[in-house]
Every structure is written in structure tokens, then in C-alpha cells.
Amino acid sequence: MCAAGDWTARFAPALERIVSDAEKLRGSRPHIFIDVSQVASLDTFGAWLIERLRRSLSDASAEAKIAGLSANYSSLVDEVSRVGAAPKADNDTLSITAMLEQIGRVVVGIGGTVVSLVDMLGAVLAASGKVLIRPRSFRLTSTVHHLEQVCWRAVPIVVLITFLIGCIISQQGIFHFRRFGADIFVVDMLGVLVLREIGVLLVAIMVAGRSGSAYTAELGSMKMREEIDALRTMGFDPIEVLVLPRMLALVLALPILAFLGAMAALYGGGLVAWLYGGVDPEAFLLRLRDAISIDHFIVGLVKAPVMAAVIGIVACVEGLAVQGSAESLGQHTTSSVVKGIFFVIVMDGVFAIFFASIGM
Amino acid sequence: MAEQEAIIRVRDVTVQFGKTRVLDALSLDVKRGEILGFVGPSGAGKSVLTRTIIGLVPKVAGRIEVFGIDLDAANSAQRRAVERRWGVLFQQGALFSSLTVRQNIQFPVREYLRISQRLLDEIVAAKLAMVGLKPEVADRYPSELSGGMIKRVALARALALDPELVFLDEPTSGLDPIGAGDFDELVRTLQRTLGLTVFMVTHDLDSLYTACDRVAVLGNGKIIAAGSIADMKASQHPWLQQYFNGKRARAVVA
Image (cartoon, rainbow over all chains, first blue to last red; front, side, top):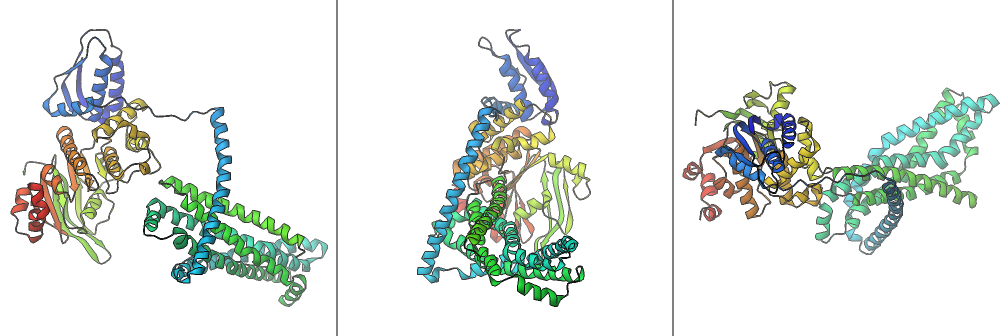
């Protein structure tokens, strides 16, 4: 048997076919020599294919040999001949059991999520307790920095979006109420909806998308680069140093943003009522004063810090759960936003039941 | 050495970050089949030059030819052809964190060659054996590997397509002395068997002594000196004096 020409990576697909044809000769002759003196160039691909051919042509009685090896390539062939059998790649099998296993894992995962959220809540409360006892360990600079990131820098987008939503609610209200000649009631709807529900809910969802994801990505990449372990070895509590300032910033920011958002939505709604519905500003304000009470406003704002805490806890839990890979960072950032928004809406429902039962 | 063809030809290359000039009209040749050790004080711009040659850092002026092709003038097909012929070992390994070791090594091979899964797996086993790792490592993720293993896997990936030219950015840093010695030996073996050209940024004096054919020294954005170890030791340049005749250098020679 004689090998010739270039045995390099470029020709590997063709060489592989030649080698598998040649492998069929197995056992046909007692002594096989593979003559490689005609080989023009050789690299690991070629050397391995020749070695593979040699192995498959060898059997218990006789071993195939490689002949005519030039000095340049002998060390490469030696190197390759020491390679053991390739480990099998374990393929995922698709089966009923695998699917059931997957469902089971998801259910256990949900339980784990709840436990880790409660765990984080406890850790944050414990850290705040420690800070209250030793106020000097409070990280003011960090808190102010995060406050700037999540509050001040979020103002333009929050105001813009709530303004537009206010406009849309008002326009839709006028459009439909006009049929009953009840245009003016759009003010009631706008006031109650914006102050009680939409203002805070919309802002909380935006904050979960904007700041929750940022927290998860920050903490996650710190975890990946062992920065959090470094903090721990220096005797710092990562919850106190990283999580607490972020949580506090968020809890302070969300009521402010919710208030600004509600005002922007009322302004937008009023503007549309005036320009599109012909309700002049004076009538709008008069009607608004009758339609809403301070209760609506309080109901809206009471929810804000609680939602902020939920978003912050979810984001920090996800951030600290990131494993070593970029893929894991992406997964946890996604689930931070998804879970954050889910819990915000659940909380909103719980609050609705609560306020209804106390008659607010 | 004039008869040997230069595989990398760097001419008057200037690289600037903002106001700081990192490389100042630097010229350097790397000849086919040699192992060039590239040394210099920390922060002198060794990695910057490597990254400039590979095309990751833009240069202000100058000309770089690899395999005789001017990379600025090359179209994308030519560039890809050049990239297929070189392998790069990054300082931190730069393994894809969401892929296993096996997938990391197979990644470039899959892109360029249509070969069976069986051969792909065998190639992975061969490459892992060549860099001194056990085949069991194949199904681990980079985050489950030690620093030295990451280096080895990264080398295996850089060598996956049997390139003619490899860039090694501090290949032996973070390896134990025996591992580093094996690594040097491995680079030597590969260079002999595959006719590999190696551009190695290093701080390891052992590597310079045992693996490198030629040494180039970077300082103040230029090549201060290039030549054999003996030339370096004979040089009167104060930094070279300190580097090659210092306490640690004597320990290596002894």
C-alpha cells in the first residue's frame, strides 16, 4: 500500500474517504506495509489518518507497519501513534424520560427560585441591620452612583414613555366615550388609571428591563471574573458592598420615577383631551380634582418601593447565580427581566386585592 | 539568513492610543520556520504589536505583510485564506466559555473542512494528546479547567487546523516549571515536524533559551535589538544587560 501526495488538513475530506476505502482490506493479507515515502507533505491530520489506517489494518496476528518514513515526519508520526482512542461524545437522547426529567427539573427550579429570593431578602435585611448598627459601614458613594444610574438617567425615557401612554389612553377614551356624549369622563378614567395602576406598573416594568438587567449583568460578570470571591477573601460581605447600595438606590428611585411618570401621563392625557377632545385645561383640572382623591395617589406610590425591592432582589439573585460562561450570563439576565416583570405584575394583583378589602 | 523568506514583514508601523504612541515606526521580520521570542518590559507594547499584526488593533502608519500578502490591501477572501493559515494563542486563552473543550477545538475545523464527526473527534483526541492533556478533558467546559489546562486547550485550538504560523502570547505564564518546559519542548517538536513558524511573546527566560531561535527586544516603541541569545547577552543596552545578565537569568543558565 502506498500513500503519496499532500496529506494535509486541506485535503482531509478526500483523504478520509481514501482511508476508509483502504480500511476494508483488513484481514485480506498477513503483512501490510504502508509506504509513505511518496508523501510530499504531512501534518497532524494526515499523520493521524495514516495512523488510523495502520491501526485498523492491524490485528492480533500481524501488525501493519509504516515504511519509508522520512526523518522530518517520524517525530510527528510518533507523536500521533501515542494518541489513545477518541472519547465518545455523549449525545443528548430525546425520549419520554428525558422530557419528564426536564419537567421535573423545571418544577424543582421554581421551588429553588422562591427559596433563593427569600434567602436574598433575608440577607439584605441582615445587611441593612448591620449597617444600622454601624452606620459608618454604609456605602454612600456607591448608593449615590447607583441612584444616578437608575433614577436620574432613567428620567427622560420614563417621562417620554408615560407621556405617550397618557396621550394614547386619553385619545382612546375620548374616541369611545364620545358616542355616549360622555367625553368629560375621560378625565376620571385617566386620573384613576394613571395614578393607581398604569403609572407605577409601567415604570416598574421599564425599571426591571433597564436597571434589573444591568444589575444582573454587572454582578454576573463580577462573579465570572472571581471579583466577588476576591471581595469575600478581603473580609467584605458582597451583600453589604454590592447588593445593598443597589437595592437602596432602586427603592428610592422607583417612587420618584413613578411620580414623574404619573405626572407626565396626566400632562399628556390633558394635552390630548384639550387638542383632540376639546376639553380645555381649566375644565380638565376641575374635573380631575373631583374625580380623584389623595387615596388614589397613595395607593400608587405605596406600591412603588415594594416593586423596586422585588426587582432588585430578583436581579441580584440572578446576578450571583451566574456560572462561568457567557451563555449563562445571557440566560440569567433574560430570566432576571422575565421574573422581575412577572413578580411586579403578581405584586400589583396582590395589592389590588389588599386595597379593595381595606376599601381604598 | 538572507536567503530565508520572511513570513511576517512589519515595516514602519506606528500605533497610537489617543496621545500615547505605543509603537513608533517599528520594523521587524519573522523568517519561515523560526521561533522568534519577543521580549520587552511590561507595558512596552508586545501584545499591541501581536494584535496589530493579527489585525485587531488599527495602526496609524506602516505596512504589514503576512505570507507575502499586504493585509490592508487584501480583500476579504484573501484575508480569510491568511487567517486560516495562522493560529493565535491569547494571553488569557480566550476559549469560548459556552462550548466544551471538544467543541472549542472542533470549531475552526468545522468552519473550514467538511469531515466526518468521527475524524473530528479523533483530531480532538490527537490535539489534546499533543498538548499533554488527557482525553477525558474533552467534555469539560473552560470554567472547569485550571489555568494551565486552559493554556493547553487554547494551544490545541490554535493548532487545530495545522497552521503554518502561530502567535503565542505569553504561552508559559501560569504554568508550573515542568509544564512550561514541556510546553517549550512541544513548540520545538511542532516547529520541527510541521515546519511551524512561531511568534512568541514571553517573559520566560527558560523559553528563550530552550525554544527560541532568535530574540527581538521591544523598547520605547521600537525594536532595540534582534538576534540570537548570545547577541543579546553581548549587547551593551542597559535593559538587555539587566534582563539577560540579571540574577534570575544567571539562575537559568546555571
